[in-house]
Image 1 (tube, rainbow over the protein chains, first blue to last red):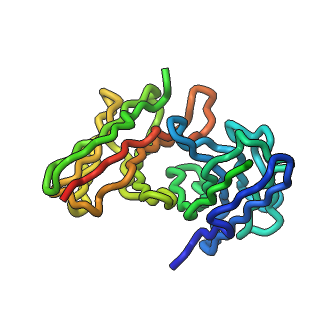
Image 2: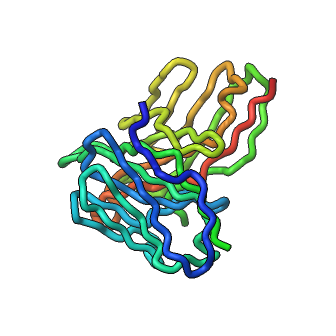
Length: 116
Length: 114
């Protein structure tokens, strides 16, 4: 019954390492999102994608990049991890809203990243 | 002023209590109102989704929207220990720049004690 799968639940990386977080959805959704969640700051949008090979910056894209080569897969890349990127990372997907309707997201279980 | 305000709690209630969770928002153009529930170490999951003012019921849960006051609520009747989670409000609509946007509250942590 799993619909949005994040490949790693817990990661520990060192400062300066390149980090890949993978997300796969099986609902044929057009839209995919990467958020990070921190105590007191809530959910903050990093990047999103409305279609294959398309990406848009969210509210906090600095230090991150993304890749969407296939419709079902959306990857988040930390080119050089830093300690302030220690966080819970959440991937989500949604169907296209067309001209109306709300953006109802289905989330994965999250990836807890610790950067030492 | 934040676009969505939500008291982070924590809120602690005895089993069987009626719980009221609330959010306020600033932009009257927002149209869709959602409540997500997030258990510890899990991703958020959609609980309720409403469009218009008024109430919407789903079992023990009632979502209420008052667009004139820009105020949304989630009521939980006969609360159970399994309701212990963080509840996030999320609001969707067009902002001042006519961009469609999903805005999240910070979440309210709820503990229901047996």
